[in-house]
Amino acid sequence: MLLMSIDVDDVHLCVMASKNFIDYWEKVRIAILKKKEEEEEEEESHLGKNTPDGNFFTFTGLRDAINGGPKGVPFKATKASQVEFPALTGQSVSLAVLQYEPRPTGINPPHIHPRSAELLLVIQGAVIVGLVDSTNKLYTQTLYAGDAFIFPKGLVHFQVNGDSKYPAIAVSAFGSASPGTISLPKNIFGSGIYNWVLAQSFKTDVDTINKLVSANS
Image (cartoon, rainbow, N blue to C red; front, side, top):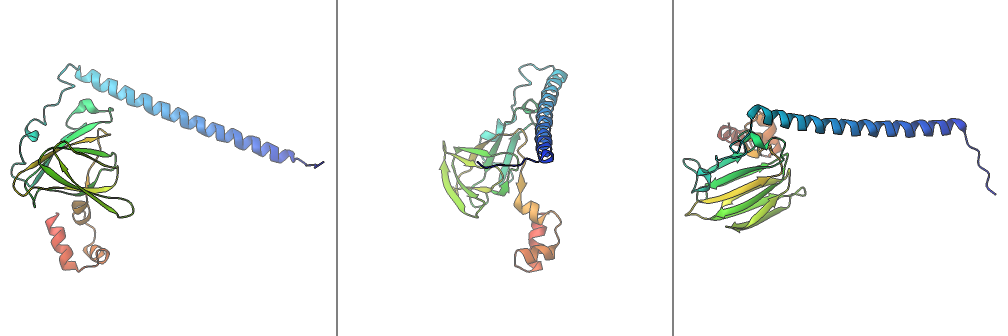
C-alpha cells in the first residue's frame, strides 16, 4: 500500500486558487453580459431617437454605383457602412459597390480590412483578384459576372479590372458594420514614416522612396 502525506497548507492553496479562478471567470461572464446589454441599449436608443419607419431601414446610396464605371477616377468604392447607413449599427453587416475603369488603371490597390472578411461578387465585367496569406503565398483568380471570392479578415488583397475596354463592377459584403480599410500604399508611404527607414526596409534608395511618398501623400 502506498502511503501519501497531504500538506494542509497545500490543500488550502489549491482551494484558494480554484476559488480565484472561478471568481475570475464569473467577472468575465458579467463583463460580457454588461457589454451586450450596453450594445442593446445603444441600439434601442439609436432607434428611439430616429423614430424609425421604412425609410430608416432603407439605403439608396448605391443606385448610381451599380451602373457603369467610375466617373473621373480609376477606381471608386461606394460604401454602405454604419457611417452612411446608421440602421446598420449593431447589425454586423455592411456593403460596398466597387467600380473599376478599364485595365490597366482600374485597380483597387493592396489593402486589408482589420475587422471583417470580405465576400466579393462580380456583377459586371471581369475582375482579377489577388490574396496573400500569412506565409506570403499569393492566390489569384479571374472572376466573371456571378462569380464570388472570399478575402479572409486581415489578409492583404487587391482587385484589377481584367478587361482593357470595358468597366467592371463588383459588390462586397462584410461581416461588420464598420470593417475598416487600410490601403497599404497610403498607409506605408503616406503616413510620415522616415524616408530612410522605408529605403532600408524596401532595400532601395531615398530618391525612390521620395517619389513613392509624393505619389501617396
